[in-house]
Image 1 (cartoon, rainbow, N blue to C red):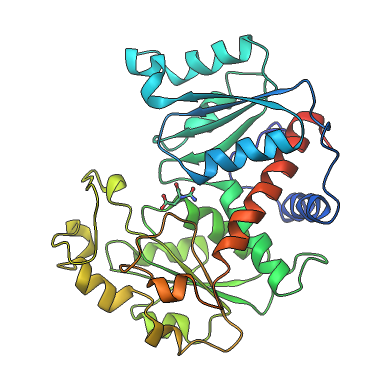
Image 2: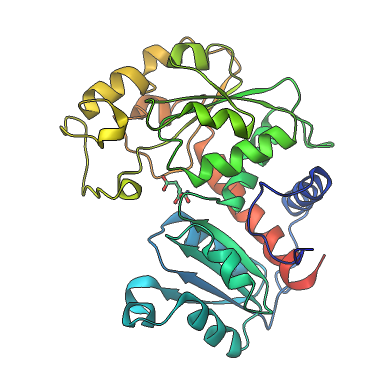
Length: 321
Ligand code: NCD
């Protein structure tokens, strides 16, 4: 029986647990907890991989609840000197922290650490595996937008996920949560990045973006995660030439043509459809600026809900309520 204080992923979460978690998020959204809720507690961010919004969001959430935050970042920690993830986590635990927020490039890293500590562990992204707080903030954003916060049933809603799904822990957590809450999920991307095997997760895989988005109530755009292909590219911009070979697409310009959400393509969406992106956005590749900043975009509400989700998750992990 997994320790319920940990949040390691959404794939094995029973529907009732997922709904309870979302109900706690909604309660935090409606009635923000007192600013001294976690006074005296220390939350440790163990980030062995880069992050901008996720780490900041956890820090803001912890501080809003009155906890203090320590950051242990990959490049500056002893992990570079060969200390294992487990040793690092156990040392930080021994200093008396109340929660460990873990991001690492290895799939399963947070679960591995959780098996070796007594402190609650929250997965902030492990390789290509899961990013549960991102999945929660995405389904919360959807549920709130479509007035489904009463019971969190997403039946009748279709979510299209577009792009580099194979590398995306965000997509995996989202597909799990969306299917558990009865939404339909349609995936599309270059064959190597949106493989037919995604059907085993309960998603429908189609080959053309227009087919994926035409009936969608929400379109979730993902960036090409070059660094997870083992072919890191610095500063990729529109007009760059080579893409990872598994994309079977020759250039970012061609990628935009086939899989990007341009204003013209966005105009074919249902009138009430919304556009989501977990960030970071490669503007001009998967998403044009006019669409990212346009009236259908809920990208900023996603970011705001990220703090609410992390407040609810930290409070539950540390206080059990
Ligand atoms: C994502 C991540 O790191 O998995 N970003 C995020 O946490 N908001 C998505 C990505 O890296 O593209």
